[in-house]
Length: 293
Ligand SMILES: Nc1ncnc2c1ncn2[C@@H]1O[C@H](COP(=O)(O)OP(=O)(O)OP(=O)(O)O)[C@@H](O)[C@H]1O
Ligand SMILES: [Mg+2]
Image 1 (tube, helix red, strand yellow):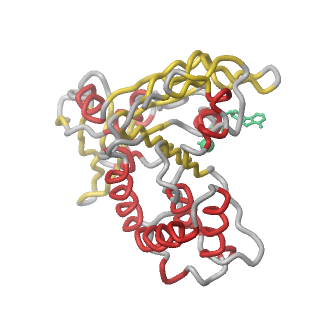
Image 2: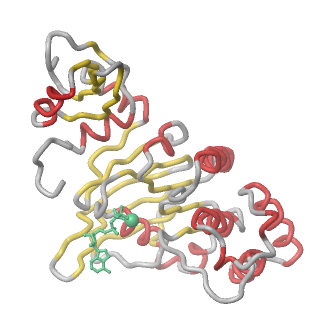
């Protein structure tokens, strides 16, 4: 199975929000990271076939998804970034209704709903109205909906927003197990959501996918660029004006500061073990004073 973007462009009026994106994805987990407004949701909506590109095509096994049509949509599970729940639907009603829309056979749907409600931790809440669920519970209901029909392609737009750490870990495990021979694409702002489960991590900014690497490759790229320094609080201001500070922790009346810098920023700093989050800050160039940040 292969999903391919061929010079996909999206314009809103005169504004270009996707810039000729070309990309080929096979089975596995793909993580999509990038700042607000990068174009992640736009790209995801095009892949989910709810939005048409202005130019370019999306190919599923070599065929344009618009030609494949319903048959393509039947292969995908999609969680939009914003789902609103309203009315009197209980969690179970919502999942049964979604299963019916997907054309699932009733007994099979019932079994899947039970399995998924248990795995996303909503089994005890299925009888409650989903409009009254907490934000994290609604997100988990949406994840269950996307997985109902065992889609070959699973597309999730910020699936973990609002999930507590335990549910976030459970989610990662569900996705890892699920992705064996399927394609999972998920966008997130939480770097750790994809750090350990994504085979490929895409970093997107200004409507363009600027980097695609494994988590290990990003970390390797940061070797020798992450530093730890201890300093009095007054000195921190000076660093903030000329380097990327990835973390600050108070320690025995002084500050322990994590600094991202190509060159050793001061003689008394030590090298730190880099993380994917460091790579994110480095590649998106979160330098002090950068416009719009
Ligand atoms: N319907 C629309 N009409 C006009 N502009 C739009 C529309 N939808 C999105 N945009 C613009 O396209 C750009 C990309 O938006 P998009 O929602 O894809 O970003 P994102 O990476 O998903 O951001 P976030 O992390 O905040 O979810 C933004 O500048 C946004 O304002
Ligand atoms: Mg978005």
